[in-house]
Image (cartoon, rainbow, N blue to C red; front, side):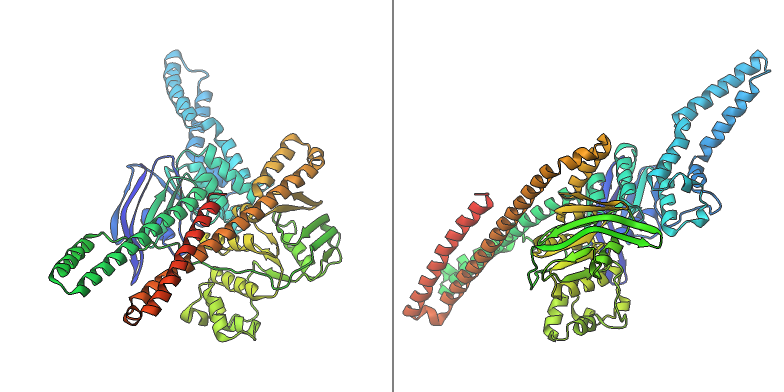
Length: 631
């Protein structure tokens, strides 16, 4: 094991961040560290690095192990070029290489004794050079630089000329080339495009043989790279042996089991308490002794704590009030120029009612520009009947940052009552005095939640979302995904979040300077088709098979619709079961009242009503079991 953390504790004043965090990471293991914003993930990294002192607990790191951490602009020489800065990681190999060349130059003219002595040193040095992969270090540098998105011409750029994001990429490249025994990465994909992220995934899977712990909001990246998930929740850690998708499913299953155990025990406790109360009501010595015995047995029960679900996240209800026509958006020959410069041309798109469509493409290709053409009525972009656009801007701009959250909603929707506004904001986790915060004091994630709240309250049926997951934590992203999947209107969105695209998109348009490509499926389908087209160089064949792909897409769409209906039916049954159980409980309470117990007629009425509820519950449970089993 490369690192072991036991019972790590950390507080900041009265704010307890980490209570009893314990986990371990093996050598060569790739682990994800997840949790809501503020759970203490970065704090834990700083404790491991010695930048913060823990209040309690112990960290054990393998003797001699080196730890690497991705910090902003770490020890970069601004006068070096990108290539030189990455190459500096191998200064020791360059020195060895220089010494080898020097020895080779000294060999001529030596007598046999001196030559033998030199050859012995030369053999040892060349062996060590080879064992340290000395003959490939320059190609490794070029490979990492290119993989992280630097073109051949950019290799010669000076560090001092780079943007903050580019410097971060250089820092990441140096870390990868150094290959520390334990690599701690906090949001490593933030400044990478999809091509660079895909390269990094492959690099970790195929080439990087050291331990890595990653904090990231890129769930697709975590799914590909991580084989273990460590979740920080309520100040403690729990480890799941699998990728991110496994973690999500296992966490949900564990919660259901824990909740079932809790509910079952609570029912038994209630039954025992009622039995004890009944025995005591007889007021006889024998029954009182029996009651005491039962109380002792009840006191010995190890109580199961009510499981804490994932923190309350956004509960979105995105239901359009007005239905649009079947044709929502049609673009034919879309083109955008700036003087003589053509940003893109030949763009064709067709979006139907209810579709969830992703728009992807390289940075700078014009995705947001195309959005603006649609929003502001470009002649090439034709909207259908009754289409009303709701726009979510990645810049999260508000007209008056001095307004409070409450004022922003109230001024936007003046007909809403105060209680309605409070309830709407509570759905986005703004409660109590939080609603009085000025917009200027909000974090990026909080601003995103305000913007989404405004969108939810608007009278729209065509959502246009520009990077909607940018400022959301992992769990809030899942809430947004579920809302978008169940949304009955139409959605077109720009996103670099591949997991989000994979879970929500029914089709994808890829914007390129020369037009738009259509992929009739989610992100995994897009990746497979791109690989097929690029690997075989048979774009024409892909176009020929478009009709088959469309049939496949329609079949997937119908299957998804069936799944949604099936899920909705189960949810309705569960709600009916809950209501019926509540009615039975209410009837039991009614029968326990003295005035009812002494009124034979009323008691009979309540009893018959309760029997009816019991019968209904039996029917509902049978139906629920049949539906859950897929019958």
